[in-house]
Image (cartoon, rainbow, N blue to C red; front, side):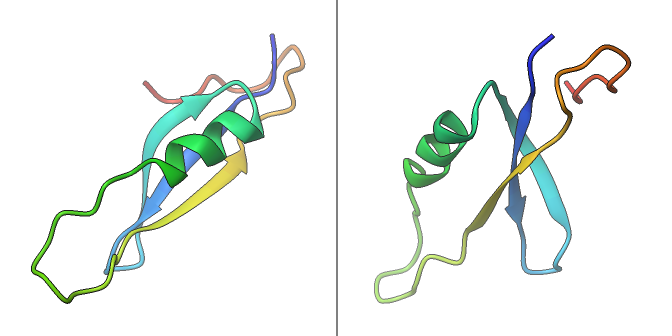
Length: 66
């Protein structure tokens, strides 16, 4: 079992939403950087993404959400 990194989206309420699982930190960062904001002209991108290591990759670690 290898380590799993979660991509979290933090919304206006401050509640993080799990939006993806990745095998390494770099692929998580790449996914966060590749998002596209669609909104009214002149507004900033409100998306805040966070990559966190969800487990150590060792036997007995919890499974990531699906």
